Length: 152
Image (tube, rainbow, N blue to C red):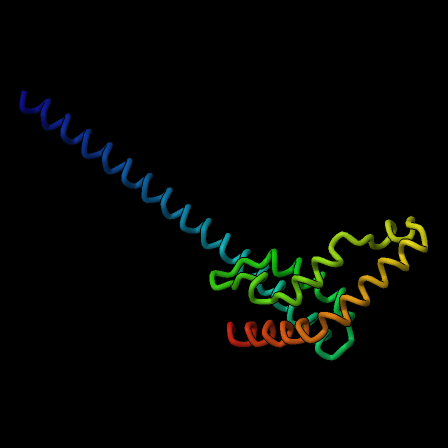
């Protein structure tokens, strides 16, 4: 009877050791997967940040229309995954207002298919918004550049 207990105990220890090893391996694989996912997110954030800074600098230097820059930056900000990412609507209200004006305006082929009178009207709305919001947008661009320079 004692020999059976020793065998049962030995089998239980071997099973527990095998399961522990298997669990440890699974946990290690999960950790490696999370690390790789974080590296992908970090690389994507670096690309997005670089694009945002480039567009913001072009807007600051008046090499890019405010409406186009606001539209592009807003989309990039939306895809950015940072732990300390500020609420963009509150932090950059000028960019948001400009984005809100132009987000539904047709571009590329859709613009070509629209009536010229409608396009002139939409261009007028966009240009007027650029004039009205210029000071806010420029201030937001400076805040944006400062945020990314301080987050390095």
